[in-house]
Structure formats: structure tokens, C-alpha cells
Length: 118
Image 1 (tube, rainbow, N blue to C red):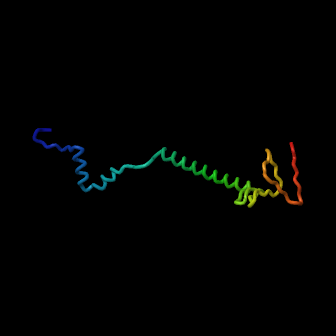
Image 2 (cartoon, rainbow, N blue to C red; image 1 turned 30 degrees about the horizontal axis):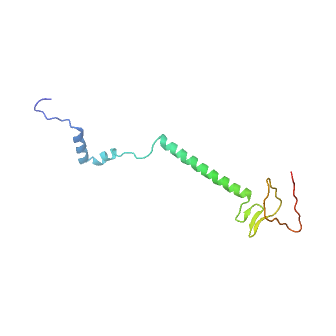
């Protein structure tokens, strides 16, 4: 370059100014859009974690409902054991593994108690 010649090279700052003020501003603006969020293997791992968590929740709910059905839980009691006004009523046979502590035990008149000692 000689002494009297003007510089044709422009600095990055001046290029940015002309790009922002020129007719290609929209095209330049699209190039400055940054991706915000999680991308790549992190996103796949996050989706896998969410899917596994949903599977565990669904299996947990299914097992809970299954246990409620098998044990015959209801508002009145569980199985043949019913909660009544003045205590608990057992309809059928029962086996107690440990000691039974009760203030009063009654039965129907047609059946008697059978106590088995081991």
C-alpha cells in the first residue's frame, strides 16, 4: 500500500456496523441466534431418566393396586376382618401366630372356639 491510497480493508467493528445497518440485516440477525437449552447426549440422558422414572411410578401404582385387591382392603376392613361399632368382627377362620390380647371375645351360638396350642 502506498502513502496516498485509502485502505480498503475494514475492521470487524465496521463490518458489524455495516451489516447491522445494511439491507442484509435480517440474514445477519439469523446468524446471531444462539441455541438455548440442552442438546446432544445430555438431552437423551434426560429423556431416558424421565422415561425410567415414569416406568417406576407406573409399576409402583400397579403393584399398590394389586396388593389392595389381593388383600381385599376396603373402607370396612380387610378380607374377612371387618371393623364394626363395638370392635372388630371376623367372619371365618383365623390363625394367630403370636399371643392374642383382647378384653372380650364372643362367637355365634352355633359355633364354638377351637384353640390349638403348639
